[in-house]
Structures are given as structure tokens and as C-alpha cells.
Image 1 (cartoon, rainbow, N blue to C red):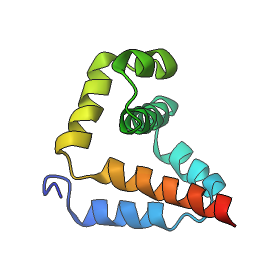
Image 2 (cartoon, rainbow, N blue to C red; image 1 turned 120 degrees about the vertical axis):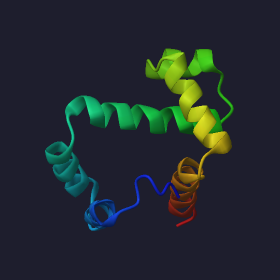
Image 3 (cartoon, rainbow, N blue to C red; image 1 turned 135 degrees about the horizontal axis):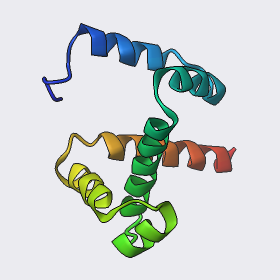
Length: 103
């Protein structure tokens, strides 16, 4: 965990985010909290991370997402050397999707 971002205000922010119960509630919070550009940038990074996790090439990722090679490289660096936040989120979504197909 990066101690540069860890503080009571950030803890409270994450509590607010975790309190959202539906995608619609997340839209409401994030539309108030972030600019449209910021939301799109975060969503793009998650899509890039998922594609990197699926072993897609930079060319494929750039073509599909419109992400720059700098963004793709930054996300790849986080996947390789980061705190595994991307991997945790990706694996949780995969697990949820697998559970849905089994039921």
C-alpha cells in the first residue's frame, strides 16, 4: 500500500465507494465525484489491464481502446510491479462471471 495516499480522507473516500450497492449508484457517485474524462480514463485503464491480463498485444489494445502506448505501458508496469489491485479486480470479475454461468 502506498503510504503517500493513505490517510483518513482517502479511507473515507473508499468507504463511500464501497457503500455503493449497484452500478447505477456507482454512476451517480462517480458522475458527481469525477469529470467525464476522468471516468473514461479510469475505465480505459481497467480495459487495458484486462486485455494485458488476456495476453493481448499493445497494438491490439491500442486499436480497441484508443489508449496510448504510454498508458498501456503504465498499466503493464502496475500489473507487473504494482500492488496487484488490477489483478484482484480482474480476478473477482472473472470469478463472478464464472459463478453466473454455473448457476
